[in-house]
Amino acid sequence: LDSFDLNVAADDYALAELPFDIPDIITLAGTGDVGGRLTGSPSAPIFAGNVQLSDLVVNSLAFNPFLAGTVAYSPTAGLALDVEGDTDNIDLKVGPIVADSDAIPALDFTVGWRGAIAQGQTQGDILTGSASNFPLAALNFPAGGAADIGQLRGTLSSNRFTADLANQTLNGDVDIEQLGVGYIGAGRLTGQINYANSFATLANGNLVVNENLYTLVGSLALDGPAPVYSASLTTQKGN
Image (cartoon, rainbow, N blue to C red; front, top):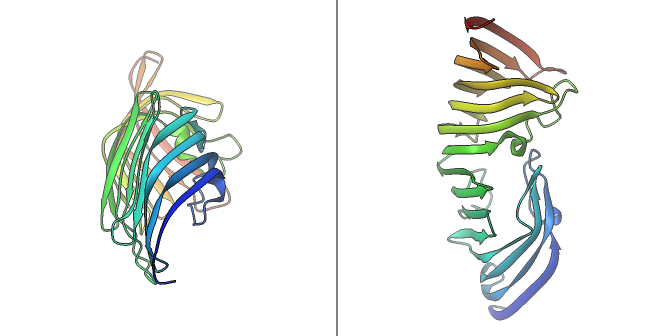
């Protein structure tokens, strides 16, 4: 078979069973219906069609019950997905994957969820992005929770963050409302974060708890069997 030109359809495909690797910190649930035209050849297939995602959940983030739009793939352009629902939308472009290479494909995304927005794009291994009122629970961080307490929660806004996807580093400014870890609440936090080699630091931090204002610098080590915290808190206003 040298080439083909087919109309194809797949219904109720389980998103958790997608036939490619997904990072451990991402869990998917829901189903997808896809229909479109498949052309090209077995070594260079080209697909363009329509897609409907039902009950999509990414980590703890449940999207609208139905997201509908278009999906396309080609070996030269990669994957393009553009779907939207009543209040949520996903616009995702993933560049072509180079065979026998560890190179990270180009990535460009905008995700809207209940008025929250996260967007970013890569240049080489470097991802630059921003977020507005985005729920931290969607990050599933730390992946196993923090010392059996739970995971980070709150809503994140960042004018700019930069991540090195190859070396797993991250830095940027943060503004987190209703910050908490598991059952522990900590108010609002602003500052600059840096993460590398399983070690995170916070600089120029300001923490607001009730009407009290504190200056906060700290670190979090995640390379051992349990997280290790270190922090210095200075009262600026209040008790």
